[in-house]
Image (cartoon, rainbow, N blue to C red; front, top):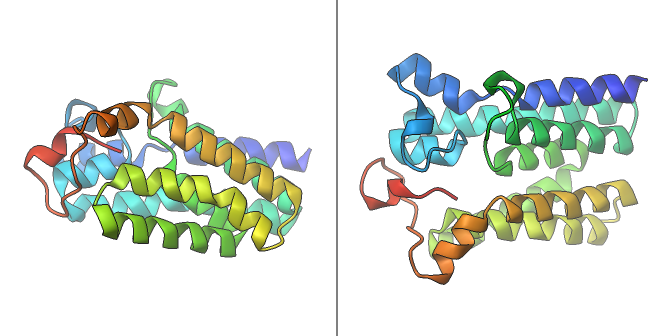
Length: 205
């Protein structure tokens, strides 16, 4: 019963569309009409810069981290995985936006792993930073980091629920980047800029 309650709490936390709310409060605009139309932190950063992008990253990460950490501490890794996965699902199909399309789960997945398996989360973040620094494609960095999670969980000796969670997260993130993959194959994916504006604001990883 406790695990079920934690899963519901994780979904509700994940459903908080922070990118959408931040842009609405501070700019009076709907981020879904800007850039790629995605509510995730990357699109917020692309369009509005780091002033809103950094808070969006931190809040999207926190909504995966807190439920996963609390569930892991209260019950164990299995419950942490369930709560973290629920937060990711909430970010993808948020209750507070009528279950319409949300974000691509990258920051929320990272937060969930930091909560349930910190070493895996840190290793995944390291992969993201290295790949991003090499090519400045946030989509490639996100998919590479997500795809590495199960391997890190196995190498670092985490139990099978964490390894399975890594597989789930990797597949989920890659599937939600299908449009980015098509753009990459056609040479149309734009490199990320740290400042808003310019052609790179048209596409989101």
